[in-house]
Image 1: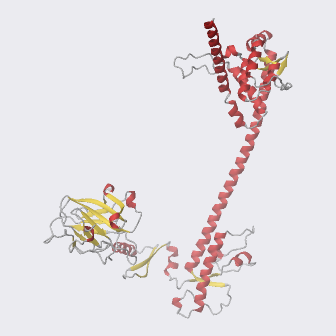
Image 2: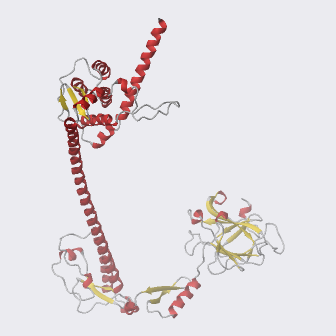
Image 3: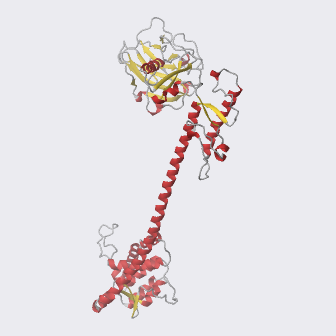
Amino acid sequence: MAERSRTAETGTAIGSDEIIAGNVSKYTVLPPGYCGQPKKGHLIFDACFESGNLGRVDHITEFEYDLFIRPDTCNPRFRVWFNFAVENVKESQRVIFNVVNFSKTKSLYRDGMAPMVKSTSRPKWQRIPSKNVYYYRCPDHKKNYVMSFAFCFDREDDTYQFAYCYPYTYTRLQHYLDNLQRRNMDYFCRELLGLSVQKRRLDLLTITSPEDKTDLENSVMQKKIKIPKLSLNHVEEAGEVTDYGEEDAELRHSKRQDGRKQSEGTHKSIEAVVARLEKQNGMSLSSTSSPEEVFMEASEGMNNMDDAVVPRILYEELLRSYQQQQEEMRHIQQELERTRRQLVQQAKKLKEYGALVSEMKELRDLNRRLQDVLLLRLGPAIELEKVKAESVEPEPEVQKTFNEEANTSTYFPAPVPVMDKYILENGKVHLGSGIWVDEEKWHQLQVTQGDSKYTKNLAVMIWGTDVLKNRSVTGVATKKKKDAVPKPPLSPHKLSIVRECLYDRIAQETVDETEIAQRLSKVNKYICEKIMDINKSCKNEERRENAKYNLQ
């Protein structure tokens, strides 16, 4: 830290807050305590050229230098730009330059940007590799932000120049503008507005079509146009429209046909411009200066205070603002109309979708009834008896299983009336696809609570326990056991009957299609659980019989 507070040549202490007067000029940085002529490798810094900026250099080590840049003119708080040259280098000399007094907390150097470098033998600007550039907060400089970059000089005879980014000098700009002015282009106009503090030109460039060039060549002080004085009351409540000439026709605001008010933003912008025009008008009427120093000169016959005289540039500014707001309003109205049409189309689609859902339900019920009627009328009686024998289990076994599974008490309520879609014949209920079940057990099933018990009891009524224990729902072997053998799957048409019966039961409770689909998706799960329960009961029964046999 003590080394960082010494100058390169004299070694006197200088505070970090010292005001930097000017750029360094052929400044040789020598190690502390060195006396004699500079040698190769003792760097010489120079920033006394156009767009140059380097105020101070501190020698830290043989390979490291601290650089202090000068602030902007008339703004000492901003320090960003640097541009300096280095000479008297040694071949393969490696250095680290630390720009220690940056004023910005965020910089593009964090995102991959790097300083520029060129030399006398390579005059084209190139970027230093970003991997050699670091931007960080340094505790040795009061936690200010420091940009450090490493560089290796490869030629002794070259003079190297470093810059924040691509320099663009004032002289280069003036040469470019002079070349444009010498071409005498119709659409280009260059005027001198004034001089800066350092007596440099401040140019006004105008690029326009050749037709409007004659209007722009006249001074703003001399070109005047009389336009109506704008106010909200005049715009919305005026009963008549005064003829102001062809040039002012676009600025007239007629009363709106639909009675709608202008937007709040439009009113505020017009009020601001009107206040500005009225202020300038009052100044011009009360001033006694020469005609060249005022915007306009009141005519002798102008006694009507409802008229205001403004320069053309303000009139064009107001006109452009008004046209731009009209264009924005038109775009907003088009967007609203497009959104309204989309909403109407979506409402129609939703209505059609609801009608299709209702029609699908009706068609599904009608299809079931037609299937039942066709099976009864077209199927032979012998085949029907055979299907019934295979489907219906012996009455004692079904009664035993039903008593184990049904969630009911010893007292059963009055039988629920059979729905119209199920056919009742000789104490049997036809569920569809030639499947018959006992009427009494069917009524007991209807009062069962819960989808799980309902599905399990219905599966026992249709297949029976002997069939279920030797079957599976999908016919695929379980993955829990490596040596598991797949069992025959259950009949698909009987599974569909179970789903249809459960669907009719759920449809009486809710009309939400999502809920119905969610509850129907668990049918296979319920049947698998019932098969597992049956197999578990059989294994327990076998264990009990084996235990009795062992005791005997």
